Amino acid sequence: MDALPHRRRPAARLAYCAGAACLCAAFATACGRTPRGSVPDGGHHSTQRAAADASRDAVAGDSATLGDAGGPADASVDAADVPRPRRVTITATGDIVLHPAVVRVAQAHRGEGRLAFVLAAVAPLISSRVIAFANLETPLTDRFRPPDRGRTGILGAPGEFARDLARIGFDVLQVANNHAYDQTGDGLYETLEALRAAGIEAAGAGPTDDIAYAAHVIERDGIRVAFLGFTMRTNDGPGRNHHDERVARAEDAARALAAITAAREGNDLVAVGIHWSRDRVPNVDDGDRALARRMVDAGADLVLGTGTGLLQRVDRMDSPRGHALVAFSLGTLVSAHGNGYRVGMTRAAIAANPILNDPAVRDGVLLHATFDLSTPDTIRISSAIANAVWTTHADEEFRVIPLRGTDERIRSERLRAVAQALGPAVRVRP
Image 1 (tube, rainbow, N blue to C red):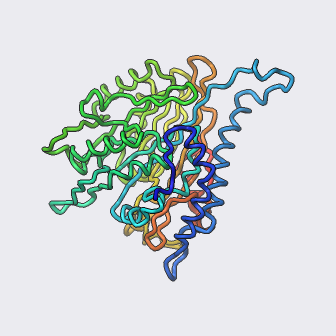
Image 2 (tube, rainbow, N blue to C red):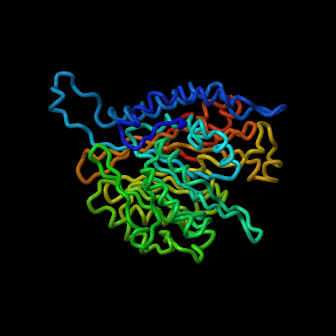
Image 3 (cartoon, rainbow, N blue to C red):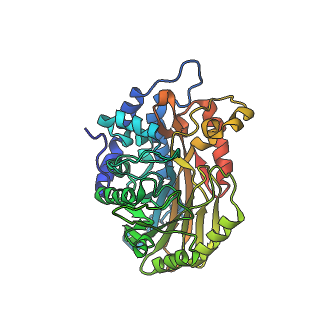
Protein backbone atom coordinates (compact mmCIF):
# COMPACT_ATOMS: atom_id res chain seq x y z
CA MET A 1 0.00 0.00 0.00
CA ASP A 2 1.08 3.64 -0.34
CA ALA A 3 1.77 5.18 3.03
CA LEU A 4 1.15 8.81 2.15
CA PRO A 5 -1.80 10.31 0.29
CA HIS A 6 -1.19 12.36 -2.83
CA ARG A 7 -0.57 16.02 -1.92
CA ARG A 8 -0.93 17.99 -5.13
CA ARG A 9 -4.14 19.87 -4.22
CA PRO A 10 -4.10 22.15 -1.13
CA ALA A 11 -7.10 20.38 0.44
CA ALA A 12 -5.42 17.01 0.11
CA ARG A 13 -2.21 18.40 1.57
CA LEU A 14 -4.06 19.80 4.58
CA ALA A 15 -5.60 16.40 5.18
CA TYR A 16 -2.20 14.80 5.04
CA CYS A 17 -0.61 17.18 7.56
CA ALA A 18 -3.10 16.12 10.22
CA GLY A 19 -2.03 12.49 10.00
CA ALA A 20 1.64 12.80 9.18
CA ALA A 21 2.87 12.59 12.76
CA CYS A 22 1.17 9.21 13.21
CA LEU A 23 2.91 7.92 10.11
CA CYS A 24 6.24 9.18 11.39
CA ALA A 25 5.70 7.31 14.65
CA ALA A 26 5.09 4.04 12.85
CA PHE A 27 8.17 4.53 10.70
CA ALA A 28 10.29 5.48 13.71
CA THR A 29 9.33 2.27 15.50
CA ALA A 30 10.35 0.24 12.48
CA CYS A 31 13.77 1.91 12.28
CA GLY A 32 14.87 2.21 15.89
CA ARG A 33 18.17 0.34 15.42
CA THR A 34 21.73 1.59 15.72
CA PRO A 35 25.08 -0.07 14.93
CA ARG A 36 26.60 -1.98 17.83
CA GLY A 37 29.36 -0.19 19.67
CA SER A 38 28.71 3.23 18.12
CA VAL A 39 27.07 6.45 19.15
CA PRO A 40 23.60 6.66 17.58
CA ASP A 41 23.34 9.25 14.83
CA GLY A 42 19.63 9.90 15.27
CA GLY A 43 17.12 9.29 18.03
CA HIS A 44 14.27 7.69 16.07
CA HIS A 45 12.21 7.33 19.24
CA SER A 46 11.76 11.13 19.31
CA THR A 47 11.25 11.65 15.59
CA GLN A 48 7.47 12.01 15.82
CA ARG A 49 7.60 14.72 18.48
CA ALA A 50 10.54 16.45 16.77
CA ALA A 51 8.72 16.64 13.44
CA ALA A 52 5.57 17.94 15.06
CA ASP A 53 7.49 20.58 17.05
CA ALA A 54 9.46 21.67 14.00
CA SER A 55 6.29 21.91 11.98
CA ARG A 56 4.78 24.21 14.58
CA ASP A 57 7.94 26.30 14.49
CA ALA A 58 7.71 26.75 10.74
CA VAL A 59 4.04 27.71 10.89
CA ALA A 60 4.59 29.98 13.88
CA GLY A 61 7.43 31.70 12.08
CA ASP A 62 5.20 32.40 9.11
CA SER A 63 2.36 33.64 11.30
CA ALA A 64 4.70 35.80 13.36
CA THR A 65 5.36 37.93 10.31
CA LEU A 66 1.89 39.41 10.73
CA GLY A 67 3.27 41.47 13.59
CA ASP A 68 6.30 42.42 11.48
CA ALA A 69 3.94 43.84 8.88
CA GLY A 70 2.32 46.28 11.28
CA GLY A 71 1.20 44.53 14.44
CA PRO A 72 -2.14 42.94 15.35
CA ALA A 73 -5.32 44.44 14.00
CA ASP A 74 -7.32 46.79 16.21
CA ALA A 75 -10.19 44.77 17.69
CA SER A 76 -12.55 47.71 17.18
CA VAL A 77 -12.04 47.65 13.41
CA ASP A 78 -14.34 45.46 11.37
CA ALA A 79 -12.29 42.56 9.98
CA ALA A 80 -13.89 43.10 6.59
CA ASP A 81 -12.29 46.58 6.46
CA VAL A 82 -8.77 45.27 7.09
CA PRO A 83 -6.96 44.39 3.85
CA ARG A 84 -5.53 40.90 3.88
CA PRO A 85 -1.73 40.86 3.51
CA ARG A 86 -0.50 39.36 0.24
CA ARG A 87 2.12 36.85 1.29
CA VAL A 88 3.56 33.64 -0.09
CA THR A 89 6.02 31.22 1.50
CA ILE A 90 8.45 29.12 -0.49
CA THR A 91 9.94 26.15 1.34
CA ALA A 92 13.18 25.17 -0.35
CA THR A 93 15.77 22.50 0.25
CA GLY A 94 18.90 21.23 -1.48
CA ASP A 95 19.91 18.08 -3.31
CA ILE A 96 17.89 14.88 -3.42
CA VAL A 97 20.68 12.42 -4.27
CA LEU A 98 19.38 8.89 -4.74
CA HIS A 99 22.48 6.77 -4.46
CA PRO A 100 21.92 3.02 -4.99
CA ALA A 101 22.00 2.47 -1.21
CA VAL A 102 19.18 4.99 -0.70
CA VAL A 103 17.18 3.40 -3.52
CA ARG A 104 17.59 -0.04 -1.93
CA VAL A 105 16.24 1.18 1.41
CA ALA A 106 13.30 2.88 -0.28
CA GLN A 107 12.47 -0.24 -2.29
CA ALA A 108 12.72 -2.40 0.81
CA HIS A 109 9.95 -0.27 2.34
CA ARG A 110 7.64 -0.30 -0.65
CA GLY A 111 4.63 -1.01 1.55
CA GLU A 112 5.44 2.06 3.67
CA GLY A 113 5.77 4.51 0.80
CA ARG A 114 9.21 3.80 -0.74
CA LEU A 115 11.00 7.16 -0.86
CA ALA A 116 8.16 8.64 1.18
CA PHE A 117 9.32 6.31 3.98
CA VAL A 118 12.81 7.86 3.85
CA LEU A 119 11.42 11.41 3.98
CA ALA A 120 8.27 10.91 6.07
CA ALA A 121 9.63 12.55 9.22
CA VAL A 122 10.27 15.86 7.44
CA ALA A 123 6.99 15.88 5.51
CA PRO A 124 5.22 17.83 8.32
CA LEU A 125 7.72 20.64 7.73
CA ILE A 126 6.18 21.24 4.29
CA SER A 127 2.98 23.10 5.03
CA SER A 128 -0.02 22.88 2.74
CA ARG A 129 0.18 26.66 2.35
CA VAL A 130 3.68 26.80 0.87
CA ILE A 131 5.25 26.11 -2.51
CA ALA A 132 7.93 23.46 -2.01
CA PHE A 133 11.14 23.28 -4.10
CA ALA A 134 14.16 20.94 -4.25
CA ASN A 135 16.97 19.99 -6.62
CA LEU A 136 16.43 16.48 -8.00
CA GLU A 137 19.97 15.25 -8.52
CA THR A 138 18.91 11.86 -9.89
CA PRO A 139 17.14 10.87 -13.14
CA LEU A 140 13.94 8.90 -12.58
CA THR A 141 13.79 6.17 -15.20
CA ASP A 142 12.90 2.49 -15.29
CA ARG A 143 15.68 1.81 -17.81
CA PHE A 144 18.60 2.23 -15.48
CA ARG A 145 22.02 2.49 -17.15
CA PRO A 146 24.72 1.33 -14.73
CA PRO A 147 28.15 2.98 -14.73
CA ASP A 148 30.36 1.92 -17.62
CA ARG A 149 33.90 2.56 -18.85
CA GLY A 150 35.09 2.43 -15.28
CA ARG A 151 33.10 5.52 -14.35
CA THR A 152 31.37 5.97 -11.01
CA GLY A 153 28.78 8.41 -9.78
CA ILE A 154 26.12 7.54 -12.36
CA LEU A 155 22.75 8.00 -10.64
CA GLY A 156 19.31 6.65 -11.42
CA ALA A 157 16.11 5.65 -9.60
CA PRO A 158 12.70 4.23 -10.57
CA GLY A 159 10.20 6.58 -12.17
CA GLU A 160 7.62 5.72 -9.51
CA PHE A 161 9.67 7.73 -7.01
CA ALA A 162 8.15 10.84 -8.58
CA ARG A 163 4.83 9.94 -6.95
CA ASP A 164 6.58 9.61 -3.59
CA LEU A 165 8.04 13.11 -3.88
CA ALA A 166 4.60 14.45 -4.74
CA ARG A 167 3.14 12.82 -1.62
CA ILE A 168 5.82 14.43 0.54
CA GLY A 169 4.64 17.78 -0.79
CA PHE A 170 7.09 18.95 -3.45
CA ASP A 171 5.54 21.22 -6.07
CA VAL A 172 8.54 21.98 -8.29
CA LEU A 173 11.87 20.19 -8.74
CA GLN A 174 14.92 21.50 -10.51
CA VAL A 175 16.28 18.96 -13.01
CA ALA A 176 18.99 21.18 -14.52
CA ASN A 177 22.11 19.95 -12.73
CA ASN A 178 25.30 17.98 -13.36
CA HIS A 179 23.48 14.60 -13.21
CA ALA A 180 20.76 15.55 -15.71
CA TYR A 181 22.15 13.25 -18.43
CA ASP A 182 23.33 10.38 -16.22
CA GLN A 183 20.73 8.18 -17.90
CA THR A 184 21.16 9.89 -21.33
CA GLY A 185 18.59 12.04 -23.06
CA ASP A 186 16.08 9.19 -22.90
CA GLY A 187 16.43 9.03 -19.12
CA LEU A 188 15.89 12.77 -18.83
CA TYR A 189 12.79 12.48 -21.02
CA GLU A 190 11.40 9.73 -18.75
CA THR A 191 12.20 11.86 -15.70
CA LEU A 192 10.17 14.76 -17.07
CA GLU A 193 7.30 12.42 -17.95
CA ALA A 194 7.32 10.84 -14.48
CA LEU A 195 7.25 14.24 -12.77
CA ARG A 196 4.50 15.49 -15.08
CA ALA A 197 2.37 12.42 -14.32
CA ALA A 198 2.90 13.03 -10.59
CA GLY A 199 1.81 16.66 -10.87
CA ILE A 200 5.26 18.12 -10.16
CA GLU A 201 6.70 20.96 -12.24
CA ALA A 202 10.20 20.24 -13.61
CA ALA A 203 12.34 23.36 -14.01
CA GLY A 204 15.32 23.60 -16.33
CA ALA A 205 14.82 20.99 -19.06
CA GLY A 206 12.61 20.16 -22.01
CA PRO A 207 12.48 18.93 -25.62
CA THR A 208 13.59 22.33 -26.97
CA ASP A 209 15.78 25.13 -25.67
CA ASP A 210 12.80 27.47 -25.47
CA ILE A 211 10.95 25.03 -23.20
CA ALA A 212 14.05 24.32 -21.08
CA TYR A 213 14.51 28.04 -20.37
CA ALA A 214 10.79 28.68 -19.82
CA ALA A 215 9.30 29.51 -16.42
CA HIS A 216 6.97 27.15 -14.55
CA VAL A 217 4.25 29.11 -12.76
CA ILE A 218 2.59 27.99 -9.53
CA GLU A 219 -0.16 30.02 -7.92
CA ARG A 220 -0.98 30.26 -4.21
CA ASP A 221 -3.75 32.49 -2.86
CA GLY A 222 -3.77 34.54 -6.03
CA ILE A 223 0.04 35.05 -6.06
CA ARG A 224 1.82 33.77 -9.16
CA VAL A 225 5.36 32.47 -8.61
CA ALA A 226 7.53 31.69 -11.66
CA PHE A 227 10.28 29.06 -11.23
CA LEU A 228 13.28 28.64 -13.52
CA GLY A 229 16.22 26.23 -13.33
CA PHE A 230 19.77 26.48 -14.70
CA THR A 231 23.03 24.55 -14.40
CA MET A 232 26.64 25.55 -14.97
CA ARG A 233 27.64 22.06 -16.11
CA THR A 234 26.57 18.48 -16.80
CA ASN A 235 28.70 15.39 -16.26
CA ASP A 236 27.71 13.94 -19.64
CA GLY A 237 25.78 14.77 -22.77
CA PRO A 238 22.42 13.44 -23.96
CA GLY A 239 24.02 10.69 -26.09
CA ARG A 240 22.60 9.27 -29.28
CA ASN A 241 19.12 8.09 -28.46
CA HIS A 242 15.47 8.72 -29.20
CA HIS A 243 15.10 11.90 -27.14
CA ASP A 244 17.46 14.85 -27.30
CA GLU A 245 16.20 16.67 -24.21
CA ARG A 246 17.75 20.08 -23.58
CA VAL A 247 19.00 21.53 -20.31
CA ALA A 248 18.98 25.25 -19.46
CA ARG A 249 22.57 26.34 -18.93
CA ALA A 250 23.81 29.31 -16.94
CA GLU A 251 27.07 29.33 -18.95
CA ASP A 252 24.96 31.16 -21.51
CA ALA A 253 24.46 33.98 -19.04
CA ALA A 254 22.76 36.31 -21.51
CA ARG A 255 20.06 33.76 -22.29
CA ALA A 256 19.56 32.82 -18.63
CA LEU A 257 19.22 36.47 -17.61
CA ALA A 258 16.81 37.14 -20.47
CA ALA A 259 14.68 34.20 -19.30
CA ILE A 260 14.57 35.66 -15.79
CA THR A 261 13.47 39.04 -17.11
CA ALA A 262 10.80 37.41 -19.30
CA ALA A 263 9.47 35.46 -16.29
CA ARG A 264 8.68 38.73 -14.54
CA GLU A 265 5.96 39.46 -17.10
CA GLY A 266 2.56 38.56 -15.66
CA ASN A 267 3.97 37.01 -12.47
CA ASP A 268 4.30 38.33 -8.93
CA LEU A 269 7.53 36.61 -7.87
CA VAL A 270 10.45 34.96 -9.69
CA ALA A 271 12.41 32.09 -8.09
CA VAL A 272 15.56 30.78 -9.76
CA GLY A 273 17.25 27.46 -9.00
CA ILE A 274 20.87 27.27 -10.10
CA HIS A 275 23.38 24.43 -9.90
CA TRP A 276 26.81 26.05 -9.61
CA SER A 277 30.07 25.89 -7.62
CA ARG A 278 31.87 22.54 -7.13
CA ASP A 279 31.63 19.53 -4.82
CA ARG A 280 32.33 20.23 -1.15
CA VAL A 281 33.16 23.94 -1.54
CA PRO A 282 32.16 25.52 1.80
CA ASN A 283 32.42 29.21 0.88
CA VAL A 284 30.82 31.37 -1.79
CA ASP A 285 33.23 32.45 -4.53
CA ASP A 286 33.28 35.81 -6.27
CA GLY A 287 31.94 34.40 -9.55
CA ASP A 288 28.80 32.98 -7.93
CA ARG A 289 28.24 36.17 -5.98
CA ALA A 290 28.54 38.28 -9.14
CA LEU A 291 26.13 36.02 -11.05
CA ALA A 292 23.62 36.14 -8.20
CA ARG A 293 23.78 39.94 -8.30
CA ARG A 294 23.08 39.90 -12.06
CA MET A 295 20.15 37.52 -11.58
CA VAL A 296 18.59 39.77 -8.95
CA ASP A 297 19.08 42.82 -11.17
CA ALA A 298 17.41 40.89 -14.03
CA GLY A 299 14.33 40.21 -11.91
CA ALA A 300 14.98 37.26 -9.56
CA ASP A 301 13.42 37.65 -6.11
CA LEU A 302 14.71 34.32 -4.79
CA VAL A 303 17.87 32.50 -5.89
CA LEU A 304 18.25 28.89 -4.70
CA GLY A 305 21.74 27.49 -5.21
CA THR A 306 22.95 23.90 -5.20
CA GLY A 307 26.05 22.10 -6.39
CA THR A 308 28.48 21.85 -3.48
CA GLY A 309 26.61 19.34 -1.35
CA LEU A 310 27.39 21.63 1.60
CA LEU A 311 25.45 24.49 3.13
CA GLN A 312 26.57 28.00 2.22
CA ARG A 313 25.39 31.38 3.42
CA VAL A 314 22.04 33.02 2.74
CA ASP A 315 22.07 36.74 1.92
CA ARG A 316 19.44 39.43 1.60
CA MET A 317 20.09 41.75 -1.34
CA ASP A 318 18.56 45.01 -2.48
CA SER A 319 16.65 44.52 -5.72
CA PRO A 320 14.87 46.76 -8.21
CA ARG A 321 11.60 45.92 -6.42
CA GLY A 322 12.78 46.02 -2.83
CA HIS A 323 14.56 42.96 -1.45
CA ALA A 324 15.68 39.58 -2.74
CA LEU A 325 16.95 36.47 -0.95
CA VAL A 326 19.92 34.46 -2.23
CA ALA A 327 20.68 31.03 -0.77
CA PHE A 328 24.05 30.19 -2.29
CA SER A 329 23.75 26.51 -1.36
CA LEU A 330 21.05 24.65 0.54
CA GLY A 331 23.24 21.56 0.85
CA THR A 332 21.76 18.07 0.62
CA LEU A 333 18.40 16.82 1.80
CA VAL A 334 19.22 13.11 1.42
CA SER A 335 22.19 11.12 0.16
CA ALA A 336 24.42 8.22 1.17
CA HIS A 337 27.39 10.48 1.89
CA GLY A 338 28.85 10.79 5.36
CA ASN A 339 27.78 7.38 6.61
CA GLY A 340 31.15 6.80 8.29
CA TYR A 341 30.83 9.75 10.64
CA ARG A 342 30.55 9.19 14.38
CA VAL A 343 30.56 11.67 17.27
CA GLY A 344 34.09 12.28 18.47
CA MET A 345 35.76 11.48 15.13
CA THR A 346 39.03 13.39 14.77
CA ARG A 347 39.57 16.10 12.18
CA ALA A 348 42.33 14.02 10.65
CA ALA A 349 39.97 11.06 10.15
CA ILE A 350 37.35 13.32 8.59
CA ALA A 351 39.88 14.97 6.28
CA ALA A 352 41.23 11.57 5.19
CA ASN A 353 37.88 10.67 3.59
CA PRO A 354 35.44 13.61 3.66
CA ILE A 355 32.82 11.96 1.44
CA LEU A 356 32.57 9.11 3.93
CA ASN A 357 33.30 10.87 7.23
CA ASP A 358 32.45 14.57 7.03
CA PRO A 359 29.24 15.31 8.98
CA ALA A 360 28.71 18.49 6.92
CA VAL A 361 27.59 16.40 3.93
CA ARG A 362 24.69 15.18 6.08
CA ASP A 363 23.56 18.65 7.12
CA GLY A 364 20.39 19.84 5.44
CA VAL A 365 17.70 22.46 5.88
CA LEU A 366 14.22 23.32 4.82
CA LEU A 367 14.31 27.07 4.29
CA HIS A 368 10.95 28.82 4.67
CA ALA A 369 11.16 32.20 2.94
CA THR A 370 8.05 34.39 3.24
CA PHE A 371 7.59 37.27 0.81
CA ASP A 372 5.19 40.14 1.45
CA LEU A 373 3.69 41.73 -1.67
CA SER A 374 1.08 43.86 0.11
CA THR A 375 2.57 47.09 -1.27
CA PRO A 376 2.19 47.25 -5.07
CA ASP A 377 5.42 46.73 -7.03
CA THR A 378 7.37 46.12 -3.82
CA ILE A 379 8.85 42.89 -2.46
CA ARG A 380 9.60 42.57 1.24
CA ILE A 381 11.09 39.50 2.91
CA SER A 382 9.06 39.20 6.07
CA SER A 383 10.55 35.94 7.35
CA ALA A 384 13.43 33.55 6.69
CA ILE A 385 13.45 30.46 8.92
CA ALA A 386 15.39 27.24 8.38
CA ASN A 387 14.56 23.92 10.00
CA ALA A 388 17.77 21.91 10.27
CA VAL A 389 17.51 18.23 9.26
CA TRP A 390 19.87 15.27 9.42
CA THR A 391 20.22 12.03 7.48
CA THR A 392 20.46 9.00 9.77
CA HIS A 393 22.40 5.96 8.63
CA ALA A 394 21.63 3.48 11.40
CA ASP A 395 21.98 -0.03 9.94
CA GLU A 396 21.94 1.71 6.52
CA GLU A 397 18.32 2.69 7.12
CA PHE A 398 18.63 6.06 5.44
CA ARG A 399 16.05 8.43 6.93
CA VAL A 400 15.84 12.19 7.02
CA ILE A 401 14.66 13.58 10.36
CA PRO A 402 14.49 16.99 12.07
CA LEU A 403 17.76 17.72 13.82
CA ARG A 404 15.97 18.00 17.16
CA GLY A 405 15.20 14.28 16.89
CA THR A 406 18.87 13.26 16.86
CA ASP A 407 21.23 12.33 19.66
CA GLU A 408 21.89 15.39 21.83
CA ARG A 409 25.63 15.43 21.03
CA ILE A 410 24.93 15.53 17.30
CA ARG A 411 22.17 18.09 17.73
CA SER A 412 24.40 20.51 19.64
CA GLU A 413 27.34 20.14 17.27
CA ARG A 414 25.44 20.34 13.98
CA LEU A 415 23.07 23.15 15.00
CA ARG A 416 26.05 25.45 15.53
CA ALA A 417 27.57 24.34 12.22
CA VAL A 418 24.33 24.92 10.28
CA ALA A 419 23.77 28.37 11.80
CA GLN A 420 27.35 29.37 11.04
CA ALA A 421 27.10 28.15 7.45
CA LEU A 422 23.85 29.98 6.69
CA GLY A 423 24.75 33.25 8.40
CA PRO A 424 22.68 35.84 10.26
CA ALA A 425 20.02 36.40 7.57
CA VAL A 426 18.28 33.15 8.57
CA ARG A 427 16.86 32.03 11.91
CA VAL A 428 17.85 28.37 12.32
CA ARG A 429 15.75 25.96 14.33
CA PRO A 430 16.42 22.27 15.03
